[in-house]
Length: 493
Image (cartoon, rainbow, N blue to C red; front, side, top):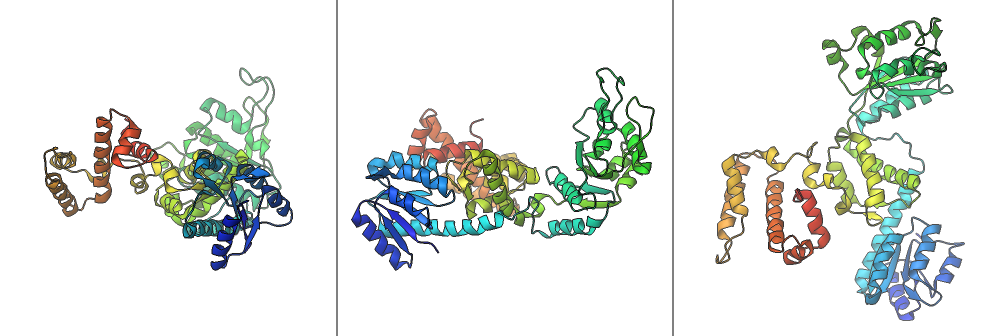
């Protein structure tokens, strides 16, 4: 492991930290100014950098910016006196791992440095894995079955039907099937049949001749011609208009079609991969999808699992998407704690992998620090929402009788000022808890805790006439906590 670098012009600070870290078997290298640190980084690199803010020859904030430009993933701890606290807080915007206020407690300082070391070591392992990580990944058995199927189909150009919920990555699988097929050197052309108006879809698929309709000023090649020698991916095939299904069946049968307005038959050597989130068997029974087309497409079927069926993959996917978002935005990739990952893994992700990617993009932009904690996750990932696929109210999940609701409301009401103790409302709470537990209601803890918190915050806001900071002070919680709770509990509505 590389040494810890300490930068401070105060010899006593350097001495104390050197001795304390040496007792922890951590190698240390000390510097008195930022200039020497930057010179040393031309040939060497620390595991963690601990720097003072105010030093002769440059500030710790300036050093932080330069170090982050050279080593984006290096954890930097900023030491600061109380008067420099504003500067330390602003250091987080520059990517500081944490700040250490002076005078500090030595064991706590060592603990903080140890946390930074652990984080650095984990990131080194993750970065090595991320550098080789493919866009399609998954250790879950269901995904391994998909990968095996792609491997078995690698020497084939057979028609494949991919099924699965929206956002599960059906197009990625189609691209992988193309990439690992004998047609890999040919084009891969994708079209979402549900996203194109019916009147234009025929022209998109088969092309049109000049003058075929108003606005057709030139001859245009359709997707079948564009995909000649390669693969055509028809996404959301279940939504294709019925009359176009007949034309598609003809192409799949003999490879022949006509452009819109054309009279000469065209031929295209195309492998077709189709995908849908719908149940095509049901669509056939409903009479909106041709049975013969269904059997023509359903030669090989691959079902993609929903993300809630492969929760063990959430951690690797989240880290991959954070790296991807950072590259796209040109910023340093944020790190996510194990606690935040645990929260993510409990969520059902109705939007599947696409929703997880969007959340990671949101975190890259909106999370206030470089290390993502559970409190930084978006509101829909609250613990209550994590345990069900839709953000349904707790009341709907438990569905107590109206009398029970009234009992909870009465139990949660604040006691009169003159009451010597909280026996009355605690008794009501005990009665409601007993009723719900005996009835086998799910998540009783969450249900009653949310009601309790909501009543506390509502009462405090009522007393302070809606002033959140004052309400938070009276409740003994932080400003950010009350804001987050108001959002989670829907008290803004």
